[in-house]
Image (cartoon, rainbow, N blue to C red; front, side):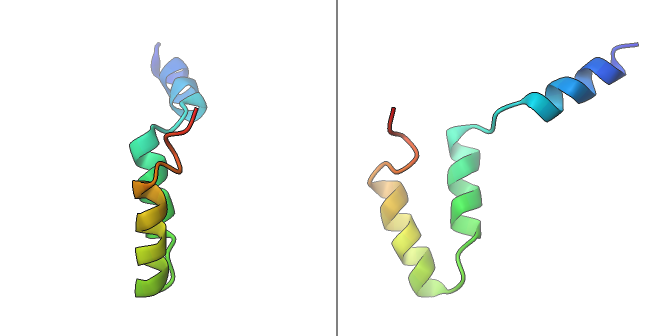
Length: 49
């Protein structure tokens, strides 16, 4: 009975800051890009309001 509601809620859920940071880091192409992205995350790229 609640399965369709749970599916809809899962689709509409906004990713957390940690999930967005991890997705950004996982998108790096090489070591240098990863290091650049890590510096961006450390500076608070995703934690700005």
